[in-house]
Length: 288
Image 1: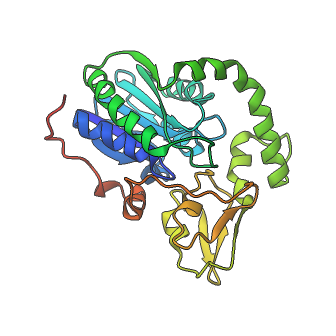
Image 2: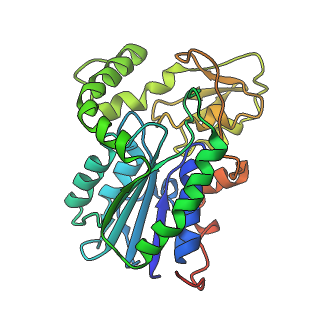
Image 3: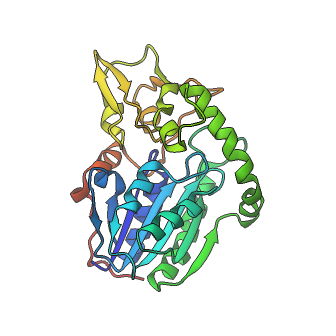
């Protein structure tokens, strides 16, 4: 296996980006969630892609854990793609640190603006944003195929403006998580995110179908007496909320209910995120 792309997704944006890149470079596609119980992960591919969304201006817990378990990556070409509705925050900085501890280094960094999936973003045209990614994907995939070292973000100006703001915004997110979880300043960001599922509730539309438990990429939901119970190992990916067929789950901290899932992704696609062997790509594809 020459190329592999690993991804994590909650509403489908990162899956679309990972799938597009994998298709264009002839890579096998693996869901990070399917490795969550592994202690050590051996990588055979020569080129490795890690595609993930930015949560709370940082790297999702599951992605951080996954990367810390990677072995044999010292001589690999590694590229990272972070998707976001706002900006990359500290996610790449955190990823570099984790990979360095595992003996690897990032060769290419790609930041991709995708439709906002946590709240209604004024003036955003999701169709236009998705089309822009498709146009950019050709050039990005070509550079990856050639193992070029590069740095690319969809909107360089926003990226530059956000860099000095990130250290100021991180404390605000920590305060929010402490208040919503009843936590303390002594708890780590990772611990607080795990308990942020305390903001989720169900309404009268819940019929106990269990779709939320099935789609949760980290198995954070158990159905008890026909209702979902969150187990405090959350990623705040909003998969449960956005993939509920009855829109019966809501985030009580939101000012208004907002639902989003990528139109190119299906519920079955999301279920496969936990089934590693079902979505490997055909390695006989012709690379660019």
